[in-house]
Amino acid sequence: MTAIFNKFRTGLLPFYVFLTIFTALVTLVSCSKDDQLEIQNDFPFEVNVMPVPKDIGIGQTAEIRITIQRRGNYEGTQYYLRYFQFDGQGTLRYFNDPPYLPNDLYQLPQEQFRLYYTSASAVSQSFDVWISDNFGNEKQLTFDFNSSD
Image 1 (cartoon, one colour):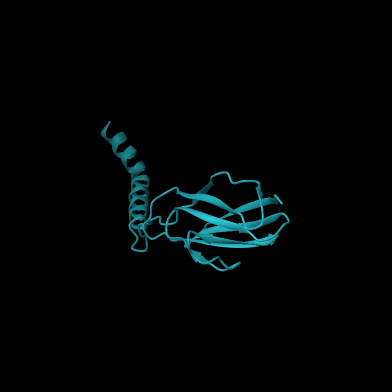
Image 2 (cartoon, rainbow, N blue to C red; image 1 turned 30 degrees about the horizontal axis):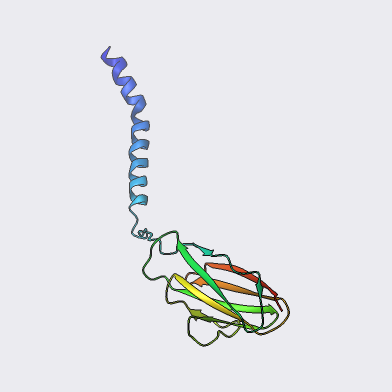
């Protein structure tokens, strides 16, 4: 009986050697010094806009309330705004700041803010607003106003 047991143990020896080498390799690979803890600081976001009027007359101002909703919270996130008007004429500004220039990039001071669009034409007006962050995430908003004159 001992001879059969020794023969069985000897037959498993190559398996035990392979298992030991495999375990050592997996341990060494998983403990590599090149592995670094991945910290996520790129959080996509959504943009919510309150309803705006459909009609606006020359010289009238429409308030646009916007809220940026983060999917995560990273202190270093900066948000920016740029816009381009492709129909009609008007100005877009933040609170009492000077009007924005088309395609220029402006840093947003907070994640909940109001923009003011003032009509300067008697035709329909359309413009896009892009809100982006410093990680390359971007959302596009399109606004259309009909002339009420």
